[in-house]
Amino acid sequence: MEQISTNSELTGNRVATGVQGFDSLVEGGFPRGDLILLAGHPGSGKTIFSAQYLYHGASQLGEPGIYVSFAENREAFLRNMKRTKMDFIKLEQQGRFKFIDLVTVKEAGVEDVLALILSEIDATRATRLVIDSFSALAQAFTERINARIVLHTILGKMTRLRGVTTILISEKPVGSELIGGGIEEFVSDGVVILSNSPARGYLRRKLQVIKMRGTRTRRTEVRYDIGDHGLTLYPIPEISPVQKVYSERIKTGIEGLDRMLGGGPFKGSIMLVTGAPGSGKTTTGTALHCGRRQVQRERALRFL
Image (spheres, one colour):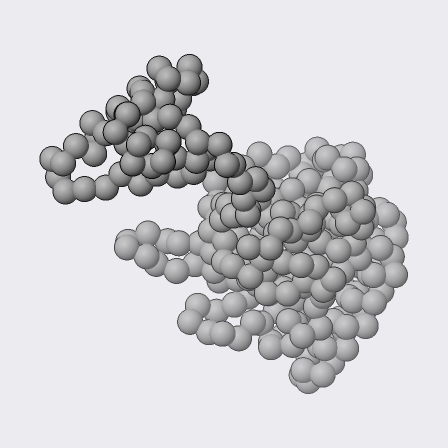
């Protein structure tokens, strides 16, 4: 598996999300100024992921953020996020967070909504923005091309010029491969998919980075969970190549076995002891464990 770089040269142009286990998948965070599409099934954690992104920036890095909602109202958002240890009320009082509560608008009012968003970005000097959701905003347009123009020109270019890194939330219906209106994924700089699927009576949650421009990403799905502290990812451990091969042999403490192995196994090697039930696997393993300690005077760790 390829090693994902997180050196200082890259992380200086990256925006850390604060989502445990995620940033290592994308070289330290989102590329600064990019438009990131976060799509997922209902209940997959899109709002919590986005809230963690804003909260981490405002509380830990001093980067003001704005949450624009076309669905959940301010009171419900603040209440729900407080259950995951995120106190946005305090950040509001400090001027580091702004919640813009908007009703669903018609096409004629979209221009005013976008002007309000850009005005608040300038007023708060926000560098992080979340729009929840573009699926709701796009419903205002009678023609899909108009939604694409807004997404590409206004939400993409205008926020990039201001140095704002934006998360665009989009719904992904269960059982459908289509994301939102089918245009967001092509215009966005990055696409992150959250999904739920039943497995043996449990709900299995998976995250996948579909694309992230200018970034080397892992191509595997990553399991995650939602708990009292928000989203936590559990990336698959990387398998690194052996850095050093030893020619030195070690004594096992079993004289006959050492002779069979030409003086003992090589240092750093792995031995597999296998056999039928009752053939002495545990006894052999114990003898190796104890004999090695007596011969070499080394510490040993044994798992049963």
